[in-house]
Length: 122
Image 1 (cartoon, rainbow, N blue to C red):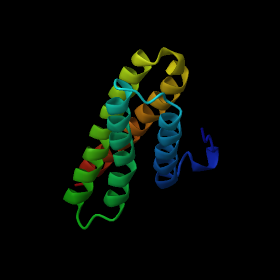
Image 2 (image 1 turned 180 degrees about the vertical axis):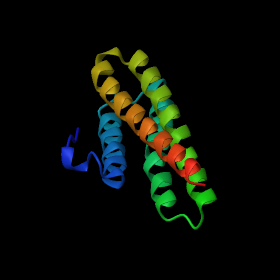
Image 3 (image 1 turned 90 degrees about the vertical axis):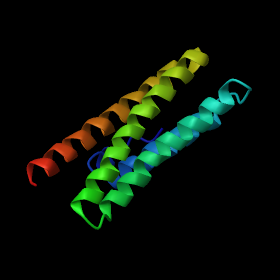
């Protein structure tokens, strides 16, 4: 998993690295009847975080920007949910899932701060 401190404050790179880390994590999971739908859900929600942030970065209005950041927040929460379910289903990967869960949580806090600051400036 990529842990590059120079990217810690670059949210574009940080969300891309998070998506890559999720994909690498999912590649290493045993794909069976139970894990397959969980993996697909995790990939959708986790990669959507950065995609929506990128869209927010190019928003045509503050309303559009706020909407995309809110979607990123929702996706971080969903990603944390799927990571917890997968960690329960495949206990041997619990530490990796915990690392990714913490990163999703940090992204959630960052996006919440962005929303607060934008709303305070309206």
